[in-house]
Length: 124
Image (cartoon, helix red, strand yellow):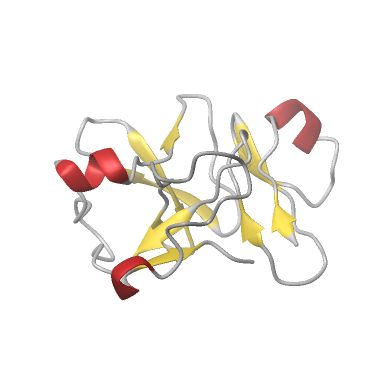
């Protein structure tokens, strides 16, 4: 079962929704993957440190775009924000930065799952 991160307005109507500002993740029964507002799968990177800058830069950052927070976004529950190299904030789930994968071409794709044994889908 896939987890959708729908637009905030819709998510705020759900009492169990975790606010991600312009995006929100709503918990559903069973273990599933989280996606962004466009339905694209979210990933974490094992090489990212618990604090400090992302270990994904240059070509890595082009292949694995960071999921950035808007200025009005607010962390909640397992969803937090970490400073990004450009001065903005990147979303993190359970303390791990969150990314999408450029080779996922349509909603539901999860081509990055276990990529090089370092990239993993974000699951509830």
